Length: 171
Picture 1 (cartoon, rainbow, N blue to C red):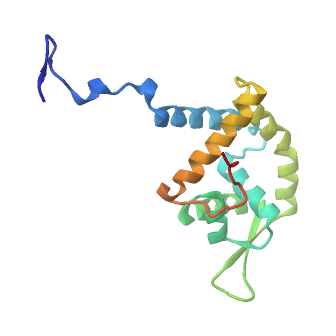
Picture 2 (cartoon, rainbow, N blue to C red):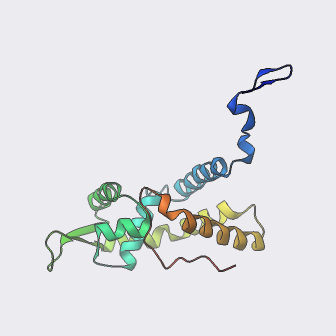
């Protein structure tokens, strides 16, 4: 590298400004979103990942573990440990499939469904708090662009989501 005038050799980090890196802000927003969610769901002691798993199974009873992992974009070992915790709290149940004994089918229990009803207002409040700095128009545009980024980069994930029902609006 050619030396810089008066400041010695140029270092690679000199060209990088965190304030210009979208990944930096995405990571920060993820931290903020999780913190807000945990505040709102503190009474129910539910994490965002546990909520996603429980909600998905409640909407799709008898879903198998691998399909759940693909639907919510998590690796199968993480989903297994999430299910272990939900099952220990009697919020979800796994049962062998009658057609294929290798498959473990998931159902939300009555307690799990009741917890979803109980946590719903807090989850909705969390989403409102996360988006509060934006105008109504900005919220719609942000969500559209965020979905486009996630879908466009889904293949780079360690656990790509197979969910096709969340499509970004066409340009």
